[in-house]
Length: 355
Image (cartoon, rainbow, N blue to C red; front, side, top):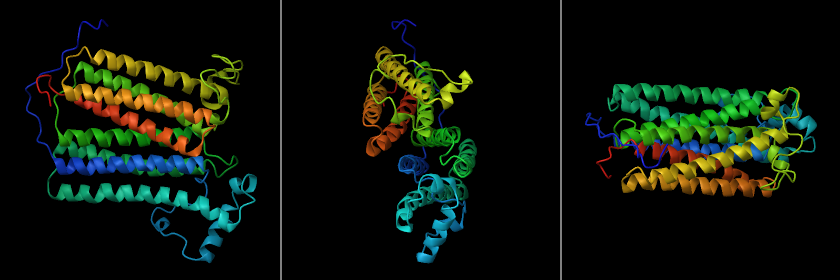
């Protein structure tokens, strides 16, 4: 599309719903908690702590071990599963505590998100502070939150059978659902904080970009699930080549992007490069769209976030997934998603209003 034919932002005069700042702040708070949850999840995965709790107790699981007898019982349960038997047989009870606490905090934080979402939701419903359309969106988010808890346990179950590691498919699904919840919380929160007009061509371009960013992030889930970031730790070449030998050499070949370590990492590298290029294109074209200062600023945020994420990705690879960089890289993916969500919403704003 020619850059001279700038898309026109809709100047619809349709009446917009009233802002509800209290609901918006609550939803932004929930989104921040989901962000922290993703960071804790990344830390849990990178320290291989996620299989330390071998039971799912949605209610009684909030109670931590209170004495040595409790710790011994938990340790004995853990010792019956593959991760202990094949990887961590050297662990004492004291060693076990170090991996237990991260997984415990991860699960506890998830429960806390549920409470922080549900209690105010009931309050706002009782006060009739939420319009009908928003109410159903929030019920949908509540259901998604419950499904996320189930997905988390379904993921853990995959590492309690034969292989002492969770399925990369289930890990990626767990991460993907977290991103969906995060985007939805931000979007509905923005709708409540400052209602906007209908979608425009620029906002649709931002949504298309978001789909690519999420797809790239999900490919990173497969890298994480297979620990594929611990090999071919050079950049920009991979095994000394742009297209390394052995790529897609897997039986069956169609599973290579999901199960072959080399192919999975190669896919993620090139999707990341494509994402970076497409963000640059989006940012450059945004300069031709006659945006307000705040709208243009939102596109600057996307550019800044993708530059940071690329730097973190390369640094994580070269460091052979150093823990702080690995966690920061996962957090950076969520930050990038947040910026493009914000840009997509700001670009729905009528062109005449420079706010």
